[in-house]
Image (cartoon, rainbow, N blue to C red; front, side, top):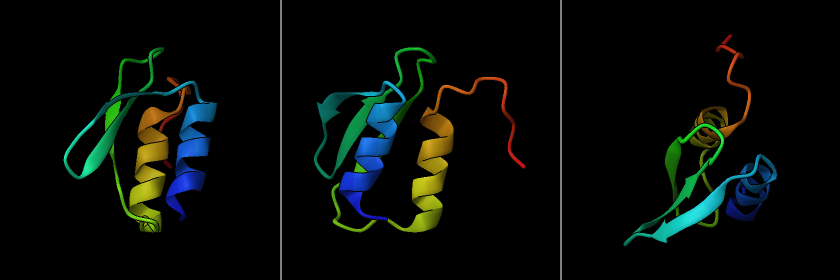
Length: 65
């Protein structure tokens, strides 16, 4: 997945950039309080991108599977 597409997706959940790290940018969902690092690569592996989306989305009641 392209990094710009991942950022558009998580910002669509209401996530905001909280800080720039050395190799990652940190995004937080203010509704859930969950923070996740987003690597600064043009391409992010699908498995990692899905995990970040799952952690940052607003669906508090939704479970894996």
